Length: 180
Image (cartoon, rainbow, N blue to C red):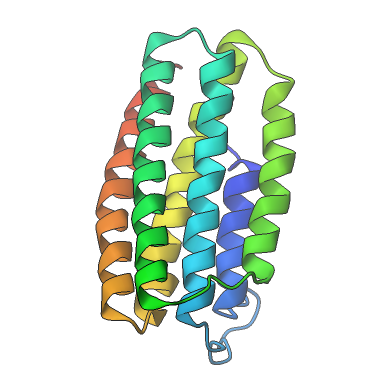
């Protein structure tokens, strides 16, 4: 099974921040990524999942898919509100960056692809994307964003988000199995 475009974009977008090159045996040192960029990437990733959840709520009639989408919208919105409160408290302005831009561009393409689907085909594609997306986000959080965060409060928020998003991944995986 191929990972959906959006999850691949996230994985490659985050990897580009860390300067990981799959064809190079020894990757060069990762460029510095600052907390303002990390905040923007994390917020953007949350907004992408909220947008996908809203689309699922409009298109799906499957009660389990709808319940999952409601959970995604609620949880990602709550984390994003915490992130906004934290950056305001710290006086930090989230900094747009190539990774955030890539995520947004590829999310728009995925939303368009999902918009063309209906019924079970939509439900399956949405949930499969959620599985892959959460795997990519969780990997980016644990491998790049959390280790790169300099501010202890930002790092703590990202770690809390990671725990929540790992539970989202498990939920999505169980839901995907039920839709086969």
